[in-house]
Amino acid sequence: MPSVTIAIANQKGGVGKTTTAINLAAAFALKKKRTLLIDLDPQANTTLTFFNPDEVTHSAYDVLADHQISLGEVVRPTKVANLCLVPSKIALAKLEAHLVGQFDAPFRLKDALAQARKDFDLIIIDTPPALGIITVNALVASNYLLVPVQASYYALEGTDDLLETLERVRARPNPELQLLGVIITLFDRRTNLARDIYKQVHEVFGKKVFKTVIGKNVRLEESPAYKETIFTFAPDSTGAAEYAQLAKEVMQRVS
Ligand SMILES: Nc1ncnc2c1ncn2[C@@H]1O[C@H](COP(=O)(O)OP(=O)(O)O)[C@@H](O)[C@H]1O
Ligand SMILES: [Mg+2]
Figure 1 (cartoon, rainbow, N blue to C red):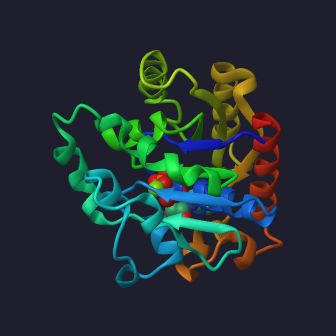
Figure 2: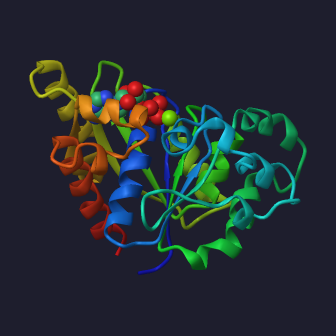
């Protein structure tokens, strides 16, 4: 399998980016893929699913802000076999200001990853709810973009801007970048609204929409509080089954 780096992005908050990043990465790790999860959200929700704040000394910020620390120095093994994490800290919120005027600003993560790539089969990047320099770094360093879309009223609001950013990254810094797919999340089968949104997302994205749909599942919501992925917290839940299914579809699309 060629080196696969997937950025999970949507500038809307609360659409399931972090939940998807964590559980997709865990699904690959369970399949014995050497997986690296990179947390680029200053909110650090992904990081806090694996570590306590006081356990995080260095973070992605140290790697991206200056070249003092290599990515390899901040990679941490997690308690999930085959799964490592590059943690985030609130300091990342300062990155934007720090990188203003730096000619290599969009390339910081890509450059930092050059050494580490050989150690991993798959790299998954969780991004903040914004289309600023952090998300651009993720897109420049990736070969695929995966977009979670929440099955709610304004589901598709903002996807135009996201797709425009994809095109701009593809035009210059990273022609390799492809839209891997759109995953419908937080889907509530009981409502007509969710079914309408489902249809709408298919009309706009066609074959790019994954067949797997991630339903609303309280287990997925609870697991981070117990510092677990869905596969250890509730292995028999529909959430676990759906994320395992999504991982399968992702594997088919990247190989
Ligand atoms: N399929 C789901 N079912 C129930 N709750 C979910 C589901 N996916 C995400 N959540 C919850 O919704 C909130 C937002 O999800 P999150 O993954 O953090 O989104 P984002 O990273 O896009 O902001 C979190 O509290 C999360 O636990
Ligand atoms: Mg998040």
